[in-house]
Amino acid sequence: MESGNGFFAIEETRLDPKWLIDPKLLFVGPKIGEGAHAKVYEGKYKNQNVAVKVMHKGDSPEEVAKREGRFMREVTMLARVQHKNLVKFIGACKEPVMVVVTELLLGGSLRKYLINMRPRSLEPRVAVGFALDIARAMECLHSHGIIHRDLKPENMLLTADQRTVKLVDLGLAREETLTEMMTAETGTYRWMAPELYSTVTLRHGEKKHYNHKVDVYSFAIVLWELLHNRLPFEGMSNLQAAYAAAFKNTRPSADDLPEELSMILTSCWQEDPNSRPNFSQIIQMLLHYISTLSPPEHMIPSRTFSSENAVLPPESPGTSSLMAARDDTTSTGRENKGFFCFGQCF
Figure 1 (tube, rainbow, N blue to C red):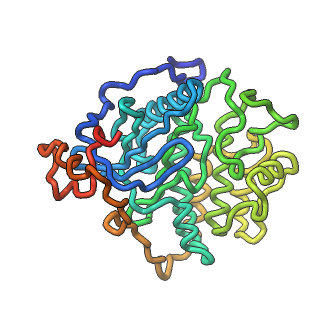
Figure 2: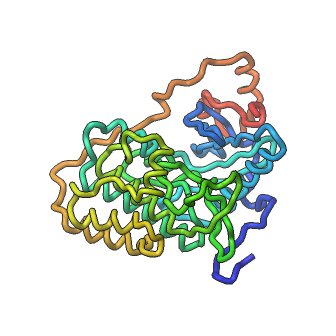
Figure 3: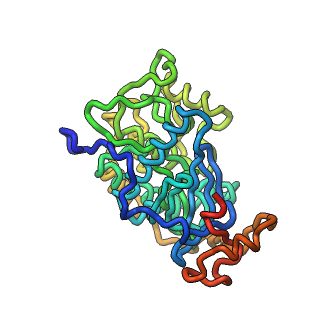
């Protein structure tokens, strides 16, 4: 249903049939990630290498409902928006468990990439190039009325050649409407915009207004991290960092950066959301800056990750029977070595 400002409100409780995957054609391999809401596995679907995100169900009826809502939001938004810097959506299913299937990105998370680089910093052209990828994805989301709400390096993955960044995890993303009141404490504290807090501590579940400019603030913190390859608000806990940003207007220092980059950062993390640029403006500023850089003398060699080097979990009893139960018409045994039929695993 379209609201008066051109944004859309999610009312779907069922999956669009065209995005339903057939669990019998899905094979699950080694676990490649885990978060508070889901586990992610390498997998195969119709002979395509994929990432299989298996959502946790929750222990109480309230938690189950909350996680189903998160799952439906993510699926709805992934299905609606396609962009080269957003992970490609392949399909989903709700039974036997909630699963989101996307393209498999083998370059690892931006967080791991940065940690592996330390104590070195990224070359400015590489850092700004990654920032442009993120900004272009966000421009696309905002043009569809979607606020990400959880921009941070953990939610950004690299392609196998580690030259392109793609956004993942739209589980906290929300539609932006004129009247919507949204839960304030969302996302990860260190990267959260100060307007997500009030001068009086919010009670659990209490709501307050904010808009898409929260993503611009988070982007600025990520950009600072790309340029310095250090954790923003070093020496502070996540909550301390959020408190300092919200109530003391504390920001990481941009004094040691070129004037143009410093200006981009300080404009993006302005306390007043209305003073922050939008992502179309940010893209133009970044493109202008990158045009002033001299051609790189050399490129930092990529560290590619291959699933062939991944450590597989020990083989469990019943593995042979699970492998025998797969549908051999969809894939050869050699192609699915180490992968198990999804329907037999969950």
